[in-house]
Length: 158
Image (tube, rainbow, N blue to C red; front, side, top):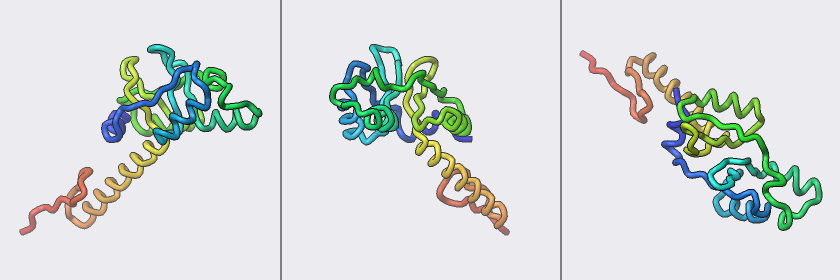
């Protein structure tokens, strides 16, 4: 079973943040520069919201606002839902689906540890399924279990 901690171990725990007093334009510039779809909004040490491409599309463009004169605080999504690192990818998927979210901060005992995206979760699920399929194929053919390696385990034969 793959945990959120394992996903963060593969991708790293870096999280891009922005302050609530920054403009939407500055947020979009940072998102483009870092090639991310969402930023965590922090005020000092406190997480106060999330700003995503979806927030921009629905709350700026469609409402005729200007990204250069609108502040992130006006558009950020709240409350911020999060997941803990020892939860499974299935837990992640359930929360993301229930709350219709594509990005989920990870808090480890109250401390920001990273962020996972729906893409991270789907990739982890695909990897887990590939390993299970390979293990079943190896079992059926008598080659043992691969156990998350790229090479089948071949048992000695007499």
